[in-house]
Image (tube, rainbow, N blue to C red; front, side, top):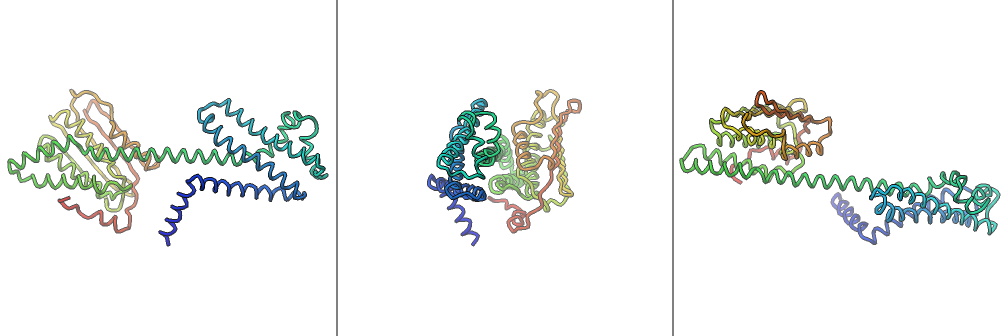
Length: 390
C-alpha cells in the first residue's frame, strides 16, 4: 500500500510537471478562487447577474494581474533589480483592476441593475469623470482595500512560491556541490598519501618486513570505508573513528619513529552517529602541513571524547619555524566548515582553529552535538569489523 501511494505521488508529480498538467493545476486553482469570490459576493444579496458580474470582474483582474506578474514583472524586471520599473508595474496592476471595476460598475449602472444597497458602493467610483473614479487619490484610497483582498493574495502567493522554490533550488545546488566536494575528498585519500603508502609497502615486501600485512589490512579498511560506507548522511561514530584509527596506523607505519603520534579516545562510540569524513581533513592537514614540513621532533596529538550527546575532538601538531607561513585552514577545512553549517544547527557545533607561533603549534578543536545511534539492523551491521579483503 505504501509503495502504491509512493508510485501514485510520483506519477502525479510527473503529470503536473507537463504543460497539460500545469494548465489543469492552474485551472483548478482559479476555479477555487472563483468559487470563493462567488461565496463572498453572494452574501451581498444581489441578483445572480450582479453577483456573477462582480465575480467575473475580480477573476479577470486577478488572473490577468497574476500572469503579468509571473511572466513579465517577476522574471524580466524584479529579478533584474529594476526597482523603479517594478514599482510602476505594481501600479499598473492596481489600475488594471480599478479600470475593470469601473467598467463593471458603469455597465451595471447603465443597465439599471445596481440596487439601492449597492448604489453608494458603486458610485464611489462612478460619480465624476473617469479620472476622478479611477486615477484620483480619492478613488485610490477607497479602492486599495478591495484590491488588497482580491488581486494581491494570488500575486503574493506566487511570489512566496518563487522564494521557496529559489531557496530549495539553492539548497539543492549547495548539497550537490558539497556532495561533489565529499567525493573529491574521498578520491583524495590521498594520491600522494597512497603513493607513499604503496611505496613503503613495496619496500616492506622486498625486505620481508613483518609489518607489511598490517599495512595492507589498514589500507584496505581505509579504502573500504571511503568507497562503500561514507555515502550516508550519518554513519556510526564507531565506524568513523575506526577509519581514523586505520589512517593513523598507516601514518605510524609510514613515518616510523620519526614522528610521535598520540591518539586517545573515550566514551560510548556505539551510541552515536555523525556526518562522515568530518575529522579526516583536520588529521590529514596535521601531517601534510605540520609533519611533512619538518621531520625533526615532529608530533601529532589527537583526542576524541564522546559524552552526554556531545563530541569533543582536538588535533594538535607541531610545525617547523622555518616552514613557510600558511593561513589556518585550507580547501579541505573550508569544505568541512560548509558541511557543518549545512548539516548542523549553529548551536550544535563549535569549531576553532588556532595558530601559536611561539610554541610552533597548530590546534583544531571541534565540539559537536551527536545524533543517537539508529536502532535498525543496517546500522548494527555497519558496526561489524571490516574484512581485510575488499
